[in-house]
Image (cartoon, rainbow, N blue to C red; front, side, top):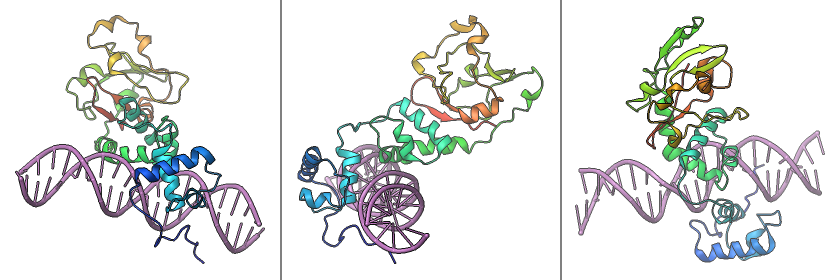
Length: 238
DNA sequence: AATGTACTCAACCGCGTCATT
DNA sequence: TAATGACGCGGTTGAGTACAT
């Protein structure tokens, strides 16, 4: 036995919502709430709409705490990072982005972020075989997996792996990472040094505070934000 | 200016899950 | 315990818009 339809599709209105319908729905919910029953809501509110349609309109558009407008670079980074660990669990991902809905995040991913993500993950992953030598200086500059930023090899260098910590010996950039946080290193372009003035920093200051080998670390936390704004890629670095 | 193509995003669909009876 | 019904989610669609030719 199939499930009974939640509404009569032949008689109920479909398609884009009019301003009047929006106002009716908003006014009703402000006054009565959803009463925990979306199916009955349109009839009570005087709307010729399916309950599911009302729910979607409210959750994805009319809710007062919805954030409209473009996604920030920080939000892009977070979405990509969460996608790499959670997959397409848009509701969970959206819950980490205040004011964004799962539909918003999903649309943004499908139209903007997916291409970047896929194009990068299809690249051949370089080996870190050189790093397996005890205390070897790999001096590997991500050439095979290099970001589309010509100078990247100059400033992102995996120079040494020791004591289970991934170490960036090049000191001409700063990184931002909360050791308490499982999640990503977010490098803010504004915080990236554009000169080598930091190269005198003690090397410990550029030591990333998590263990594991370089490949695992970069695979799990592999979203980089490059200087000058708009290039953000994932590194599938094994 | 007209037409074709690509892109965006609101909305729909169907299914899994969960609460209730 | 099974049946039922509502909710919530991810996948997909398609109308409207922007851009290219």
